[in-house]
Image 1: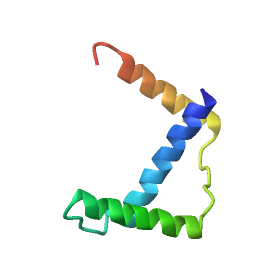
Image 2 (image 1 turned 45 degrees about the horizontal axis):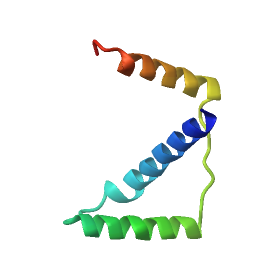
Image 3 (image 1 turned 30 degrees about the horizontal axis):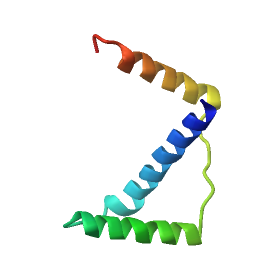
Length: 77
């Protein structure tokens, strides 16, 4: 389960960075243009990677995840 939480966290951070650095200030007229820009962004990121800084404790993150799971797994939701 720890691997899954870590992977989901990494995916979320990836999309957060892509959104802030690339998507909010660009205009893509096709999927191909978007894919090309994302690949360029990843290449540039990998040339000068920045460490991730955790702003919450593991307990805070897992608590929030638990609340999300409870809300979304309720059949009456």
